[in-house]
Length: 425
Image (tube, rainbow, N blue to C red):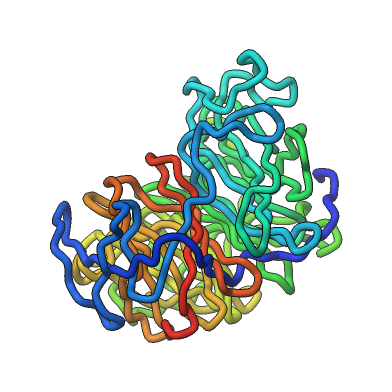
């Protein structure tokens, strides 16, 4: 079991950041198109700065960017990805932020003459996690530093009662694991690997706040959905890794399922959970586990776990699943499935907002959107990357529900968005 980290109050469930140019505008795009359509809350209005279009009444502020010198002397690495917000001292906002850089990639976080930190998990890998501490009123940067380095393709992950769980989307060589990172760490730390979560092409993690069961997604076209069940909540990383199965439908491919489809589910115990050849999903499917089309973003809210299947659905443009886990069984429902790229196109990171609306970001062709998903399954656009075709990622909320944070990955920007999120219900 990894060393325990002091439990902290999570902030990853509510937020809006208000400041910056009041940019109201929502673009509803088809693949590669710049067509603007009007959604249920109005049309996106073009950002005069050309960075991020938003609905009327919403605004954004750039709070960090790649290459900036951090407090520890290193520079902010490229390709910011999954992210969560934790509460720091004096109400500070602490963003824990992944960087999806592959093994062998250029280590853009280097400082101090370019040396690899001795705490690096793998000196040949350039991914990791940074910590960004913001003033809760002005959103000015109070401090920033590397927390984890030497990992590969840190894509998703999730907040937990023990800190930030970062996940590697690279199952080669030393990689393919999840790691625990301390939101209070003011310098780079030695890695805390969570072996119990298995070795595969990890994407995201969602922790049930009462049972401490952790749900894990896998970014493969033929992926499985996993959960880790601790033997004892006081030892949350010692337990069983399982894969979801559809009752009565061995190895069902959930990809073709449309909105409203429901399945009764169960769970299969897995052995050999850290194979050397990235074969965990094959082991699970041989036992009868269900197949998902690129399981990516996950979150927990309102008693359910939500999963984005990026290329699932009848069109292959994405599905959003709602999982109600009841111990040994439960139900899996398709909350939404794309009927058009204007409605939903390749959903990725997802978070539950403070008023029951889901917020997700896209990773598809053309200009990607920040979208809301109502409990009814209705999807609508809130914002759009106006700067480039880069994916949007890292969507998370501050604790008071007034600030939403996100990253424009290839642009290397971290944004805070503020507005009347409580009206989007």
